[in-house]
Image (tube, rainbow, N blue to C red; front, side, top):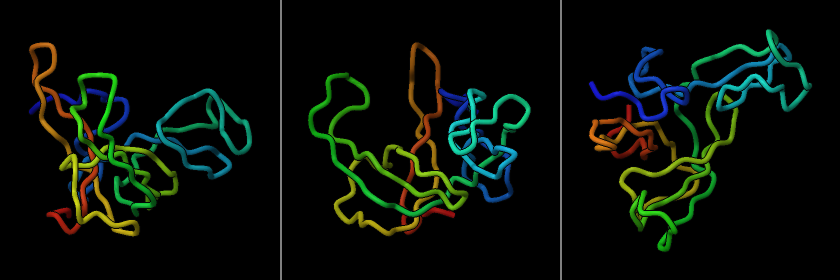
Length: 138
């Protein structure tokens, strides 16, 4: 199996749901965030032991998207689509779409995590993306 390129952001397993899970955090006050960090809760300011790692399901609702046709870096290759997704577990996150462009994409659609296999610096890696549930999501 290919290793995740940013393993601190997602895991290939962790729930029985099937798709990759996101590595987020939960504060003792109940606030859920992504990605996991220990600097302090955005809601109450607690830090340290008050923040614990949790797996987030990787499912959510598409809130907004934008297609990118000009990009300063070679990766990801243009065109690609940036998504804003309200996760079922709480946080609003940004991610990339798989496939990179989908002319039928609509705000309000359910989305789920997936991975894309890529070659990076001589090794195979898995990078995180989101796809429409209607396109084969679990």
